Image (tube, rainbow, N blue to C red; front, side, top):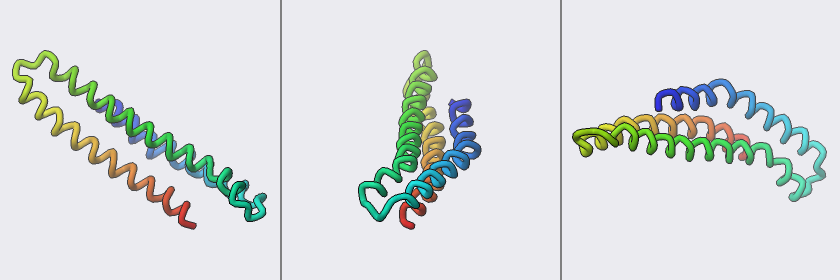
Length: 115
């Protein structure tokens, strides 16, 4: 679980800036060629929408990995209830941090969409 957490943080800290920057450049370039057409502008926003979907999928995968981790962690535990409670507590902290990170980076997406 910790390894997946670090991979996710690494994505946000390293890849996000590059992916987000590229998406903004594509959108800006596309919109300069649109003649105020709603359909054209909607097509231009596709790189940002794709990035949002990628992040949502990453979050879903994170949740699934956490559930798998808890199941495997507690499967052979002598005190299943105590293990489950501890696992949920530990995992809850990771999810809270993950969601906070997503909100920080989504904020930049929302900011761009509001321009």
